[in-house]
Image 1 (tube, rainbow, N blue to C red):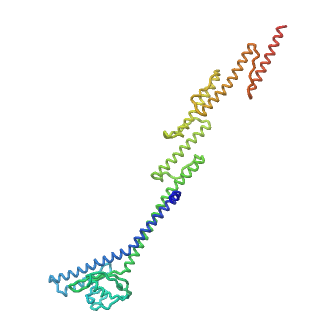
Image 2: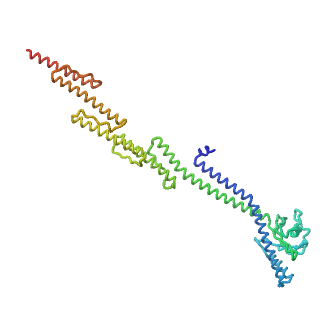
Length: 406
């Protein structure tokens, strides 16, 4: 797996990272959605409990006014009923009051139920929910009851969860509830928001990944192109990406590589000039570790010294110092072989000249016995000329001797 990942392209790696990130986002979102509905329902239940306790507090307040003698019992009860009848929350959510019989004392949306015994009332599932209200208050003082009940203005009953709390002094049950389909609607609204957020985040991640991949890929492709051309010996490669568009370490890498290409190009141009015989060059040495620049300059200096030495040899030979040879101690390797070869070539010709001069000296003294040893190749012309000279001198000498005798 590691090897497969290592062999992936940068674009492939970025796509994998994007895919893993989106998958993680989906998993987190899925877990959130799984718990969201229950959390929303629990939040609604808790809020319903709080508002019922608030309504209960309003009844307690009226009862306290009764105890303080400020209101009669009828006035206190009427004040409590009127307050709760008008009380709303979240738009249309309401409160009702029934007693322990159970007779409805107040219902803002169904006033026809007021004063009527609801012991026999049941929802479509057969649950006698008013008896459940009374039983919950008798057993626990307060609690939740789930049943079916129509929304205000709607005929068909839907699932509802109500919180009821008893007010013992008056034998009342105060209640309010939430409709589960409202929670469902809120749930799907939240899910839609999650999906929208996910799409936005996913889109941003995809866009950023695409931008990063594009910003990395273009200069990398350019670097690869230059590297491939450089490997084939093409030093006239040019960067196509704009260095101004790059930031950070990648810009440093790109600058360093283009500087390397420029240095190699300059060195290649210097070698080209040397090959053409132009030694008036100087390669810039970038650092103490710039072996290429140092060695190119050293090569040019050695060639210059070799040329100076050969020119000195020529001038000395031309001036008559035929024994002069080029110093070779300052050269190494193939350059030393060249200098030694030049000296050997000059020495060979100087040696032949010395032999010829020696023979001519003998001829001048009348000794015609000396002959020039056989020379190879075109040097054999010297043998022919020396032999012709010797023969002519011998013939001349013979004629002179004949004349002398006569």
